[in-house]
Image (cartoon, rainbow, N blue to C red):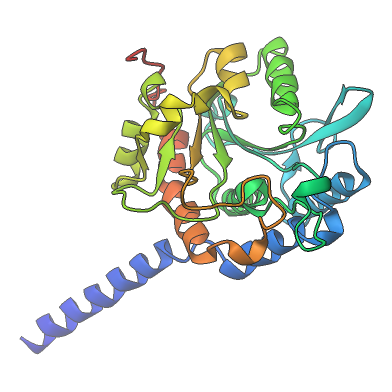
Amino acid sequence: MRKLIYFIGLIGLFSFAQSAKKTNLISEKSIKTNLDYLSSDALKGRKFGSEEINIAANYIENIFRDNNIKPYYKTYRDSFAHNNKYGFNVIAFKEGTDAKLKKEIIILGAHYDHIGMLKGSKIVNGDSIANGANDNAAGSVSVIELAKYFSNNPQKRSIMFVLFSAEEEGLIGSKHLAKRLAREKAPVYVMLNFEMIGVPLKNTNYTAYLTGFEESNMAAKFNSYAGKKVFGFFEKAKDFQLFKRSDNYAFYKEMNIPSQTLCTFDFTNFPYYHHVDDEAGLMNISHMKNLIEEVIPGIEGMANSAVKEITLDKLN
């Protein structure tokens, strides 16, 4: 009996260790460090075409380089012009491990630009810098942390990590890349975009909503892979056509693939959209860590399924 009790105890300790491991995949310290920097006053709101967004891009590139995450193209920068200014998406890539499936690509993306310096009545108590912590340093940090995780935990399919520029100019960076990948006939399977995930949703039984919920079976499959309800349906996302208003849409339009955005901004839980008070100090770091860790099993499910299980549905 004592041996049985001891054995059961060992199983319990092992199970606890495994459970603890699953909930400690991402570092809160790293989230906070990167969020604080990307939304700092020093970057002056990361306006497209500014010197400061170039500094932000360098910062992101250095993280990729330090973690041995290779560029998809010859360099990390995918350059484009808009309104006589030059910008660049920052792209890293982790090749898959399966001889066949590694030819298929999952894109994880977020825009890293914001709206820069504000003027006139939008200046508050002398503060003119729209720091863009929730919009969208939080999403950018999520993609960065996932890139670090998957660099150490390669999957069968390949994963592309993209930080888009000029989203605030009209989704310009994502349109450019989607068209480029379509021309190149890149074998992209699915695209998942991270937008405004710095504060938690209220009174829901899911962690984040998925725009274009009815456009594909992504939410159902993702939740099945994760073993819990990570993604849910948010009525306002449909009412406001958010599916077409973020960087996912260009990939749906140009490549005809499942391409959606996850978000935790519900129009009531964060009052500082495009406001100088969108600061890092208001972000919920533990929520961000939890969300990033919750999406990992779903991404792994997409990356390792024997066939492409996520498909476009026209239910609406």
